[in-house]
Length: 312
Image 1 (spheres, rainbow, N blue to C red):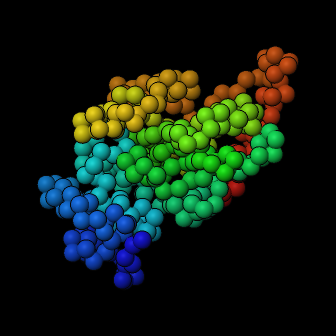
Image 2: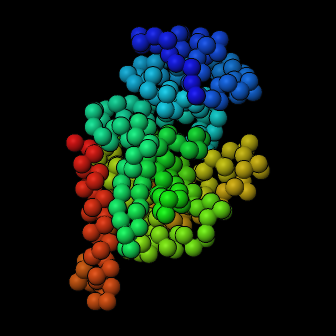
Image 3: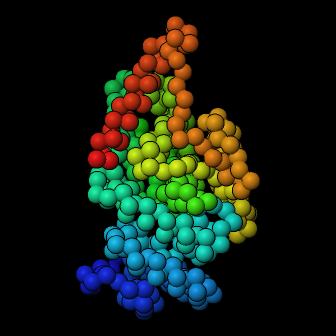
């Protein structure tokens, strides 16, 4: 998959840049493709100052070898639309670097390993559904590399049915989570699978549970806010190069969903989401619904306990 780093010594920005220019080091299979490599060289040459500073910042990260092993396409991300529509190369670089700096600041714990992409084969969260169906949420390196550095994936009946892409990037100088994408089930899946998964989770939609999981991560990482792209700030809508070629792939109604969560649209067209979701007082719920709500809250409490155990 990749060409190994030959030395255990920390890479300087010059060594990294020269090795990649000479194609001696290929941290991801994409680097083996001539077209990808040539585009990278051309775009780096068009923005030499930003590229140089970005590589310099990358090589100051303590975990750079691991980053390149798990997120091997990172060096090329600043030259393509990324995370939020409309960012320039310098802003993309800042978002990427702040993500990895934030993870380094977490210290050594299981949650850090999940957020570093080291535990992609291990569920971050797992529980049994209403009828004892195994349900899991995985945290893996970003499936859609333009939508951040990490993806949460909701698995039900052995299938990935919902995913959420994000980064732990600073926003307006505050430590944040930025949600850049939310995907539903693939067309090959039974369209009733979301309904069945919702029933198995005591009436909580899978994408809502991904948000709950993300809120738990934000709390464990002591982040100040959660931001999310809207219908008019997603890269497929905002970026001119994708406006026609990718627009047909963009079906989500982000604005509507964020509003149901209490999100507030900002002047930047991003939504600011609450760090927690309010719970209804059991006494205020109709008696025939109380048992279901108790089970919902028990599920959410169990997820909180699992995250707490990974962050110590």
